[in-house]
Length: 199
Image (cartoon, rainbow, N blue to C red):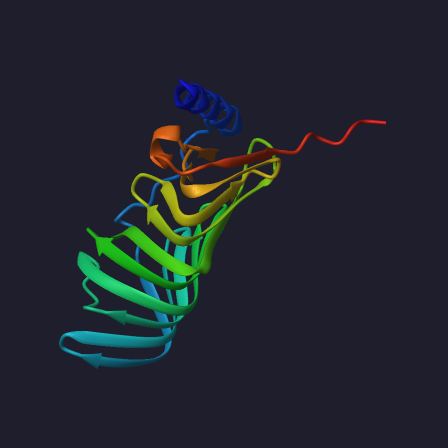
């Protein structure tokens, strides 16, 4: 009974933290050109290494000290970025020590980023506040516009903070999507900071 009440209470608080949905951010198109810049490169038939590299497509870009790829065929290729990894997205960015990125059908499809911690931030259009998150692992599904944080996860919309083992944030809708079911038996801590009182 207590567990059921806890779940309903948690769902209600998270619903408050989620707020109203926002229009989806513009989606990337495979028609947009992909640009690669690097300070140096080592190329062999089955392995490519780039240093001080940056890949750009539309409003999205990925940069790092080093990148290793299975090939330059962005139709289907796997990339590992290491050192000062930055992934620029609509209105924000993700940063980490390492990112495993998949390109599919000439689009950046998914990014699994790890760090101590890995982090992301995005300016919320409706409030102007900065949404921030950090975790040991962040899985960014670019196609769906969803960021999933796991292991020591923490999220904030500038007024509310949520921490737990696993949290989900919609980049497209700019809102928290975590649910109590996602946590299982893990405890979730939520802090709501009241707005400053007007004089």
